[in-house]
Length: 194
Image 1: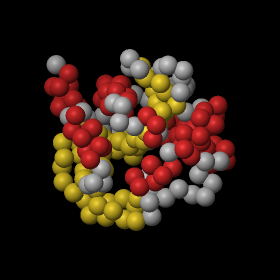
Image 2: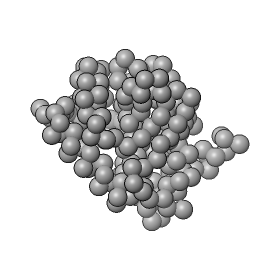
Image 3: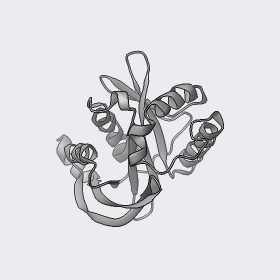
Image 4: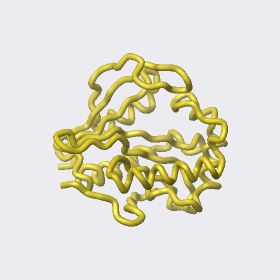
């Protein structure tokens, strides 16, 4: 089954959180959270452009996200706390490949204030059934830096398998860095739910 996003996309809900597509009205919260979390996020992300937190950069990001949704190439969502509707982070299913692959790459970020509280695990627990059941994906891949123990632990708890290490896999904070590759298959995910 191939699922294409319609309108504003899904609203995925958990006990503490909800996930939805970013909107223009989210810019101030996004800019504030990312700005306050800059030192926390920079070691794990591609280099930030000089205008990273501006409304202009955010609009570019929204256009890219909308284009990816329309083309079934990617699905970006923000994560909000149900209490107060506060933005806490974001998740992306990117590089969607259809045909014989039916796969994508998973990426995520959490504001520093909200890290290590189990929110990302909760958000991904809501995202996985959407990815496998609604979007019809067969495989979700994730890559993280070898020393990112929190991310590796999170992926393991969700059932992702380590598949090996890729040398100089992604350019993070301006440097080509090795990554540990992880994957979760639809049948593995469904087997854990039964």
